[in-house]
Length: 287
Length: 283
Image 1 (cartoon, chains in turn cyan, orange):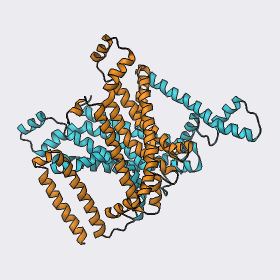
Image 2 (cartoon, rainbow over the protein chains, first blue to last red):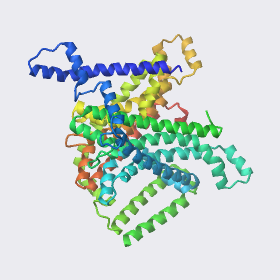
Image 3 (cartoon, rainbow over the protein chains, first blue to last red):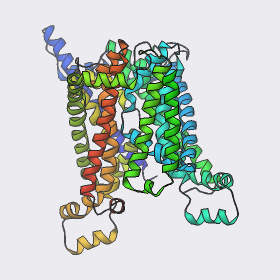
Image 4 (cartoon, one colour):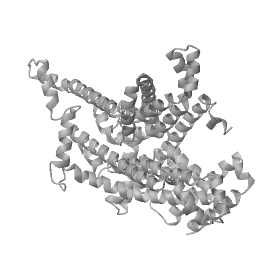
């Protein structure tokens, strides 16, 4: 509980700073309007105006909160203006991609651990690929898949899968290798084969590593799904919401979409954290 | 069909060679560690080339590596211009500013345990968010040119580096700090001579994560608006024209730049943290 007060203080400071910045950045427009109308405005009037502008440079926190509230709860969830609808579009692509990427990643990791040639040929590339801005291929994947007739959820899921793939491979290889010589020797004295060693020792031992990389790859696949919605054509999803907001200068809409994405990311990571804690506790590995 | 068959044959024989080579003593030498993955990479390229030619895949779906190479060598000035705009101006300047601010912030909050306890959970939380989404906002604020891209990069690299630096500054042991105290070293002397050097492995860990984030930020921010140069701009317009060879050329440049950037930071790390076990073990 000793973290509650400091975190609260920091969050409060952020909100105060945000209000200050909102007044400063939005007042330019207010003064501009007043100068055109040849009016004198007092500071109090400026202050009041910067809080309620329709297209502020930086929306005040309560405007964003209101936009978020209306987006999430203000309308039917099937409405095109509902952030629940857009969030679901993004979330479904994220989850499908995350599932595919994680599954393939675990399979490749198993292959790498059990096959020396695969280890030596593939592993350096998997590590090197972490230094590459893979996200840059997102627009191409969307367009190429569209040109062969695949549209909708799948192209975004492909990007998500691709982004979540490599962290899982690297983490799982580390995890499957984590049993030390003593433990492996013990299983050898039991005359355990590769198969038994894998199921009874390597796989359970890799779980902490798996969950750590699942958190990373979940965040990565959400980013992948959002960026996958940016190229022209996507009309639904948080990424499309960001893009249309930036076209029409609807800053409140951008911020609301951004916060929805943040809530989604935090929620997904927390869900993995809860599963992690439950799983490790059951396995007797809780830290 | 001959192309496809040839490529598959090459793949099989190269794979057989790798299986054989990886069990030889040669595989444990430095050259072997380089040669085997390199051969695998070449195999992928050959398979790609053979499949595209053999199956007559149209260039608007997947161009062959040879075509991409032709585009790279044929449009060096364009690629160089985009590289300067995105990587050097947008990415690198934002990287330096963001990492510098993050390290200074970490040192500033280091004296206050209250601020640390408050900022660390927030920082960890923010580091997991899809920060790249603020790109449209920052493009609105700072205009279309590289300044807005640098701003996106600053925000993206700030939190990972901050969290790592704070963790690093806490990495010294009681005994070491007590030793500095018996020397009657001041706060700043302890910081410069003991705690910052001890924090370097952590800081460089953050800096290495940040290299990839910086490039992603700089490229994706250009999808939201940019002048008529830059890698993100080129990728999104070339995709629109179905000039996929150009897209692949930019991706190749981005991959190369990303690896080189990471390698450079890793090299500096090797020089700075030569004393750390993880560096000594390798040499």
